[in-house]
Structure formats: structure tokens, C-alpha cells
Image (tube, rainbow, N blue to C red; front, side, top):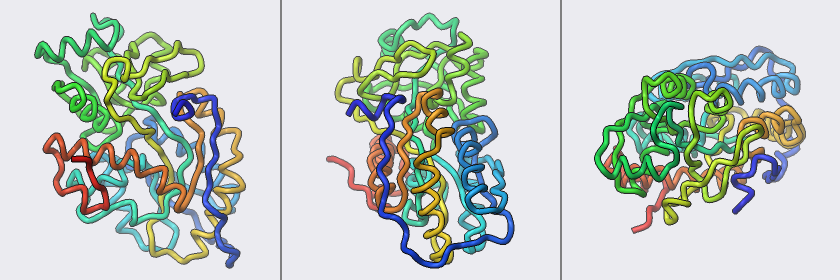
Length: 333
């Protein structure tokens, strides 16, 4: 599916508009918890989305960075907050959907939220600019030979951590992961030489790639990844043709249990404002992302492929704290 990778193509698939119930008029600021450090992929795009929501709701939408434990600290804080519609979270859907599988938040799943997706990101395998590996095949050969390759990620449950697990499973190799509190610190570690490589998202790497500090080797996709100002990044399927890939959707998540008028109102904002946002379209084009808003059932449908892929990768690697079936995921035999 070529549209999954091309950042220039806009695909908008939306659920039916919210019911024509009472409109929610918040009377004080909304806290939007980003469970990662400032500068990472979630933080970047959330700070593009927040002003759109703020203008539509007539109240400040305050982005609060609360990192820790692969995003589970801030996510748990959102789940523990009163279900009054005033505390939301933002994240990659694969993280939200897999915290139970990784054992970081027991008993939770995507069903605990109404999801509002805006873009999809693609992980990229990159190395320090001084690395001897000129393409992914050379890196793969080194790993097969048992070389000690350090890979910086935002943690085991981050998009980068799960991307690392996925390609290790597909290639039957093993690298040494070094975890950081967010995608931006992980990319900086690879750029400085503190780590040899990173598997974080393209949106987090693009500035360091353009600056010549890191070298992209492969996108975890089945088609080349086009990013404005960068040569197309070859797909990992050039080397691992049978490796499953799925876009990593990001969004805002409102925990269930709030008054229905909260969800109805945000549904309408997502349909009328977010899905037509030029700021978000521009962000996607410049960061190698796909502009693809959805909410409700349509968002769940888009989310499940990457949740399934990453949950099953964890199970195959023996890293799952619980069977993925407990969150409604069936893994292939």
C-alpha cells in the first residue's frame, strides 16, 4: 500500500460525526499529558494539535510532559485522573494498546480510551554519521556475525523499541538496546556516538539526518520513505522481504467514562478542524509522516494492525508479560 509511506499523500478516513447532542463548553483548562520528554515525536505533533483544539474549545489545552518508564508514568496519570473530560493523553497508538502486554500498566488496552488519530509515523534504522555501515545490508551482516551493536531507543515499549524488536525477530539477530527518556534523547545519543544506531521515528530523526549527524539506512516499511529535503530512504523489505510492516499512528486519547458531550464535541472538532488543518499537513510533509486523521471506530480499525504486529513481536521474543489475546489480539501461529 504505497500511500502508507508517502508523506505527500493525504488520506482522510473519518468515523461518522458525533451525535447531535449538547455541545461541551469546558470552563477551565484541559491537561493534555504527553508521557514522553520534550522534543520527541509525540511532543512535537501534540504541540501542533493543541492550538487547534484550544481555539475550538475556547479554553487552554495545556501540554504537560510527564515522562518515565516508556511512557507508562504519564499514561497511568491520565487513567488515574477524574473522568470529567479535563485530562487527556497523547501517544503512539502502539504504546497505548500494548502497555498491558509489556507489563507496564496491567489490565489496560485501547478500549480504555476514545482515540483521535492525526498522523502516522515510520520508524527508521539510522547509524551515526561516522559508522562504517553504509547500508542496512552491512549492518545486518554485522549483527549476524555477532558484532556488538548498540541501538538507542526511547525504551522497550516505545515505537523505536518495538521497531528494534520487530526487525530483530524478522532477521534472527540481536542488538544491544540502550533506553532513553524519549525519542529526542535517543536520536541525540546516536548523533553524538554514544550509541551506534537508533530505530526511532523519522519525525524524530529528520533534523539530525539533514544536519549530517546520522545516516538513515532503512525505513520499517514496504515502500521507500519520502521526506522533504532528504533522499528517499529504502524500505527494510529490500533486505527482509517477509517482514510485516504497519504504520505507527499517533493521536490524542480521552479516557472512557467522561460525559458523552465531551466525546461528541471533540468528534466534531476532529472532523471539522483537525482533518482540514494545513499546519498538520505541513508538519507531516516535513517530517516524513502521513496525514491521516480518524476518530472512534475508524481510528480503532487503523490502530489495530500496528498494535497486533508489535504485541505479537513481543510474544515471539518472549518479552510479553501477558498473552496478547488478553487485549483482543490474535497472533498468527
